[in-house]
Each structure stands twice: as C-alpha cells, then as structure tokens.
Length: 355
Figure 1 (cartoon, rainbow, N blue to C red):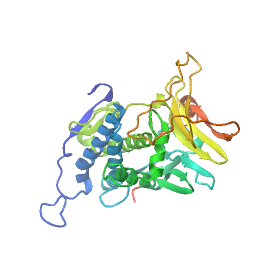
Figure 2: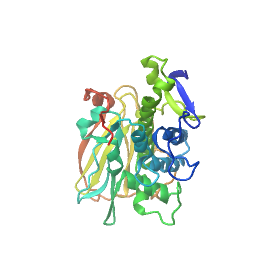
Figure 3: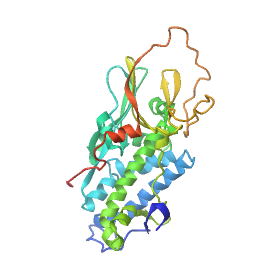
Figure 4: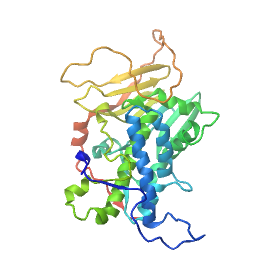
C-alpha cells in the first residue's frame, strides 16, 4: 500500500507475455495486443510526471504535456495510443463528458469549451457525453483577430502547441491566435496550461481504467474490491498517486466573448478563496474572483499572478474614456460544486462496444 493512493503497481516494460507472430524482420517488436501495455504505461507515466511538474511550478511542463497528449489522443501515424490501447486490449471504449462547445457564430471574437470534466451534473449545463474516439475532433477554441477567425479542434490545438512553441518543434513563426490564448487564465494557470492539464488528467484516468481491467487478474486477484479501486498503475519510478485536486481554484467550463454579448459557465468551490479567472475583453483585461459567503474576503486587490510559460506583451495601463466601453449582456452562470453535483443522478461514465 502507498498511503492514501492505495496500491501501486509499477512495471518497467509491462508484464511478460508471449510475443505475437511477427510481420517483418525477425526480432522486430510490434505494439499489438497486450504488447502495447508496457509502452503505453511508460507514456502515461510521463504524462503523470508532467502534470506533477506543472503543479509544482515548472510552467514549461505545459510544452511536454502537449507532446505526450498529442501522441496519446490525436489521430495520425504512431499516435492515438489511448484508443489503440483500448482496442488492442479488447476493452470497451468509454465516453468522456465534454463541456458546452465553444460558440462559432459570426459575432464570435473568443470562445472556449468542450473541456473534459468528471462532473456528471455538467450535462445539465450543455455538456455532452462523447465517445472517446470523437474527442480529438471536438472544437475547443474559436479565436477572431483582425477579421481572421481560427477554429481549433483538440487535435489542432495539441498539434499546433507542440509544434510551434518548442515541445516537439520550435517553428520560426508562432501565429498570433495561438499567443492570444494566454491572455486568459483559469485554475491558477494560463488558459493553455489549464486546458492541457485538464485534458492530461482525463487521459491519465482513462488509461488507469484500462490498466485496471486488463491487469487486475494478474496483480490484484488477492485484493478485495475496495483495494482494487485504489490501485494505481505506473512505470517504474513514476508518480504513484492521483493528480492533485485543484477544484478549489475553480473549473472553467465555457466562455464566450462576442460583439453582442458575453457568456460564462464556471464552477466554483463554495468554501475557497482561490476561485479566479483572468479574462481579456479587447484591450481591457479583468480578474474575476468568487468569494465564499462565509468568512472574510482576502485583503487587497492585487492582479492575479497565474502560472504561464510565456505571455503576450501587455499594455501597462488601459485608459478607457467615458462611453468607450460597450456594456455587453452576460449570459450563462456561476455555480458552486455543490449545485453542480446536485444536478447529477449518476457520476459513472458509460461505454460503447469496441469497433
């Protein structure tokens, strides 16, 4: 046992199993069937390590998260490892809950959505239960700058971030749209950091699910059901605990800024003073905080200092003349986690057969 994390099962290359019939040169290794387990576990352990580094203040770990997430989640030769793991091991493909998708209308200037969540009550706020295989093609960001609108799916976002910012490649030109994302902040991180970490935690949990189903008879047969649920599978030397719960900093679900209105869906911890967002509305930037009704509010109004590996240059001071700031109608809502969980009748994710 390993404290509150429960049982930890570590493996450098996965369990020893017969090597399947080879196609190609003798001695070639094929990532098929259960032979994928060891290599996939190495990848998800790297993912877990990067989450920990990001939480400990190594903001450049966001670049590493993008690279591993691209390999695990995105389609492409050698990629899609999470789906391949489920398919090769014969485990039913799960659904993920993705929050309300970003708005891509003619008046959209910036919108973010389709963020994975484990809050089943989010379905009442527009979240959609989505097969894991369709997650990479879900839109996550819509950004309009100077009349040039870009729509990023999760696959687009992960590929672009990994290639442009130096995780996998360091391109000469980084598009303005990709830079602009970090004018926003959520959960104590830049928006890119928040999106990458949230996706990484979901992928890690999905991987743990398939490891448990495939390996429980081999490693966990002697344990009762409660101890089996606590088991964590990692490569040798990897972090052997679940990622930290950062819900006390707030969970952004959806945001929309258009020429006609503002929209927001934000889940907050009713007992925390750490709930905070940083929003950019044109040249005007705002810190948004939620303060619990009980207890005293933190003193001072210092700007938020959220973690980010890089920032778009900002003006030192924004001067707004009378009548220059247009008042936009605000739609959407801020809900406490207690309210969200009261909306849910079941927190279990459903599954569909492997195809």
